[in-house]
Structure formats: structure tokens, C-alpha cells
View 1 (cartoon, helix red, strand yellow):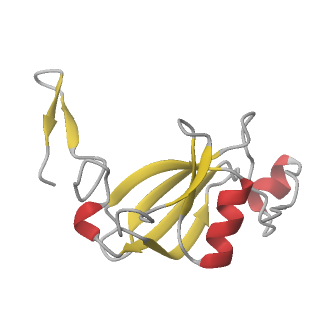
View 2: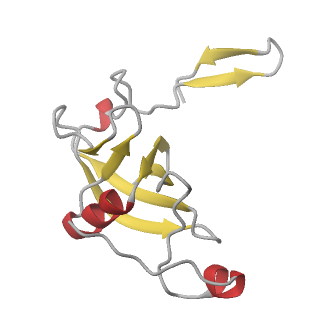
Length: 134
């Protein structure tokens, strides 16, 4: 799929305008923050290149760019935990994307078989990570 988006503009237009102008980094990626559509709970953070973003918009299913495998991947294609995109937002300078999704297998969002990739929290008192149930 040939993905084309408007080029970044001067600051005011980039930050206040209504033209979708994702700012991809030097590696051609934009950060994608993914949350559960119903609860707003953070599920994962991934990266998208222009093809992944265009494919996500075209199909309605979340696609990402795997930095380790250097390939496009459809979330849940092998696990069954497909993410249906319910909303897309962009941050102020359009260098981060926020996807609101429903998952076909909400109990299996993370590759570690957890509901969320954010299953640990930093404990300020002990200065260590602890497992979190919420």
C-alpha cells in the first residue's frame, strides 16, 4: 500500500491545523499509544511507519512496524487478539498517535499473555518494580 500523508508544516499549522500531518522520526516511525476503548486503560506502546498507519486507517485493524523484525505486523494476526480501531487521535505536534481499540481477546493484549503490557509499576519506596493488578 502506497502511504502518503501531508508533509509537516510550520509550527502553528502543525499544532493547530486540521490537516493530518503525522511527523515520522528519522527512522520513519511515529509512536503509537494504545488504550482500551471502553476503559481507557493503557494497553501497549508500539511504532508505526507510514504503511502501518495507512493500513490501519484503511482496514480498521491496528497494524504496527516491528523494529526488531523490520516488518509490518497486524496485531493479533497469529494470537487472535486483533485490535479493532475505534478512534485515532494525534498529539499537538503530530509526532505521536493514540489508538483507542477493542480487542478480540482483551485478556491477551501483551505477548506475555497479560491484559496490558503495563503490568509492573515503579515503587518509590523500594525503588524497584512490582507487579500490579491494576
